[in-house]
Length: 241
Image (cartoon, rainbow, N blue to C red; front, side, top):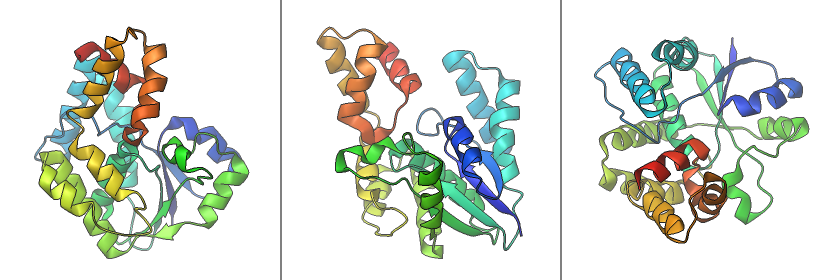
């Protein structure tokens, strides 16, 4: 039996290694919350994503296929009885990435678990694993929750609804209740407004004279932390509005 840990990004990797939790690591380096999600096959999908990043910020398509798509391909090699631990944060950014992973893993027969951040304050829900040390991560792992078949099915439905921009289905699925999706309603509400609200917030901030990322980004995070946008996504919004 293999144990695999899917980390939400490179920033957590060093602390995770220091925590000495057994298992192989796969790092999610995507941001499916932005850009096209087309493609009849997985190969077509990766090609579409690589072209998006090339046009968006000049990323090398070959590097994308090696370090992003190739990393995901490692995850899809799991076998029945293996354990896959999904270390994803609560906000929309991580939620969409997790929905994709669960959709791809649903028929593998692997045992799938959710590991969530420890949140001590209600206003820190969207901060994720950022301030966690090695001991925190070990506690998070100890408290992991196994996804039910229904959980995985709902995640798959959410992924396909998000891909198609089916806002009605996303909204309906947001009422689903599970320990594995503690803030699903908030996340789905944010997804429904993804094409409008973030841009409106950035436009409003720029209207007050905030034209530098260093000023806009923290205020955007304060107002719209549920989106989980990093500086790359906010900077892209600033260019478009």
